[in-house]
Image (cartoon, rainbow, N blue to C red; front, side, top):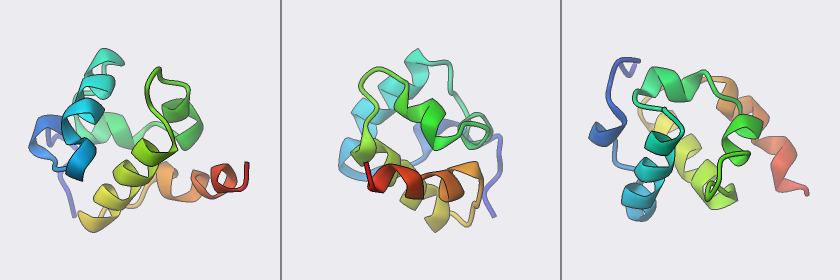
Length: 80
């Protein structure tokens, strides 16, 4: 299980890592705990945060053993 106090800059989001971190920082998301409190809808409202970023965040957090609101909410956005 991941520590919710883990800083976002310590997490590897893959190829989009640098850009994704910048978007999260601009929206005052600094830790995994901050990120886990947001729904997919909240994340997609962020400027420059799209479906690819959403999938990257979801898969990274799941790989770290973290299940949160994000895992449930993403399904509704794949169909649009």
